[in-house]
Image 1: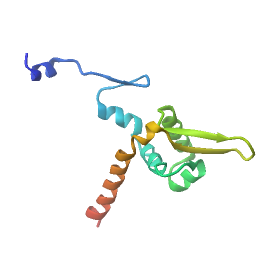
Image 2: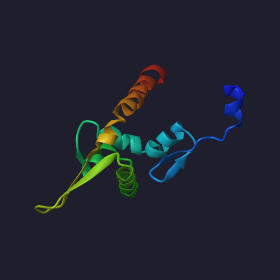
Image 3: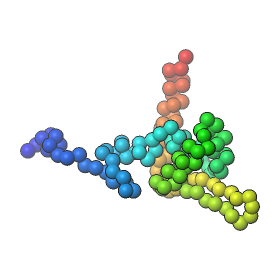
Image 4: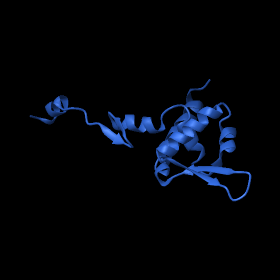
Length: 124
């Protein structure tokens, strides 16, 4: 049996990540960073830690509920960390990329660069 026959007749290999199954590597990537806001949040955390309200200012059209849910999902997937400072009031919470999250910087930067090129070349 040659490799083409084998590929056509084999079951698709499912990828597992943190208890979820994905049919391919692109599906896994989009499952983790897909959606309207996750990549935007990660983009804003590339260069510095940000507090919740600082993120809201960077993304004025996101609702508070959506931002909270997306931050929680990114934290659960291990891409960002949430640090709570409780030593003195008021409570302070900062978000930053984890080491795992920093592995996405080249991808996120490519997405941002593509967006810039679209504006330059295809906007009227």
